[in-house]
Amino acid sequence: MIDTNFFFVICSNVLGGCMGTTGPESINPDTKKPYGLGFPVITINDMVKVQNRLVEALNIKKLFAVIGGSMGGMQALEWATSFGHKVNSVIPIASSYRHSAQNIAFHEIGRQAIMADPNWKKGAYYYTKKYPKRGLSVARMIAHITYLSESALQRKFGRNLQNSKFFSFEFETEFQIESYLKHQGISFVERFDANSYLYITKAMDYFDLSIKKGGLTEAFSDKNLSYCFITFSSDWLFPTSETKTIIKSINQSNTKVSFAEIRTDKGHDAFLLDEPSFHSTLKSFISGQKKKFKI
Image (cartoon, rainbow, N blue to C red; front, side, top):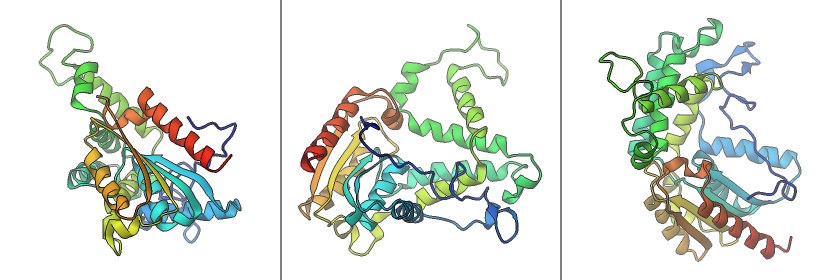
C-alpha cells in the first residue's frame, strides 16, 4: 500500500529500543558500560522528539504522512499533537490516545515476570552474559495473547493436541496453543533486550493525550491535518470505542477525519496480516492525499 518506489519512507528504531537507537543496552559514554537501569525512563513524546530531530537532520520540512499501528499509532498521534505543522496527514491504526487499565495490567505482569527472573540482576545482566530469557519469554507469551481474539485462537488451535490423541497427565507442552505461545516466547528472546521491554511498555502505559492542557479537543485542534483512523472489530486491546472518543474531539474542531472499522476476527494483530479491506482502505486514503497535493 506504501509504494517505496514513490515514497521516501523513514522508519527508525524507537528511543529505548535495542535495534539501533539509544536504549538501556547502549554504552553510557560516562561509564563505558551499558546503561541498564541507569537509562532514564522515557515517554512516547520522547520517542517522537528524537524522530523529529532525525527529520530535521535529513532537512525535510514536511512529511506527507505519519503512519503507525499499535504503539506506532501512539507515535503518529503524538506527531499530530506535538509537531502537526510538520505533517500533512496522520494514519493511526489499531491504536488509542491512552492505555487502558487493562492494558497497563497486562504490561505490569510482563514486567514482573522479567524482574522475577533470577538472571535479571536488577537490569545488570549484561555483565553476567546470562540473560533473563525465561522472564522475557513469559512476558512475550502474555502479551501475545492480547494480540489475538478468542475466536481466532479457537479457530486456529481449539483444544487440539500437538503430538498425541490423548492427554499425558503430565506438565508437558500438549496443546497446540501452548506450543504456539512457547514458540513466540523463545523466538522473541533471541532478538529483543529485556530491559528495553521494560522501558517501552512503561512508555506506552504513561501515554495519555487527554491530560494535555485543553484535553483531546485542544490536542487535535489543528485544522490543517487530515486523519485516517483504522480499527478492527475484534481488537480488544485497542477497541474501536477508544478511537471514536478521539474522532468526537476532532469533529468539534471541524478537522478533516476519515474512519473505518474493519470487520475481522483476527484481533489486534490484524494490521500485520493479510486483510484486504484494511489494505484497500489505506490505499484509498493515500491515493486521495496524493491527488490533494497533486503529487
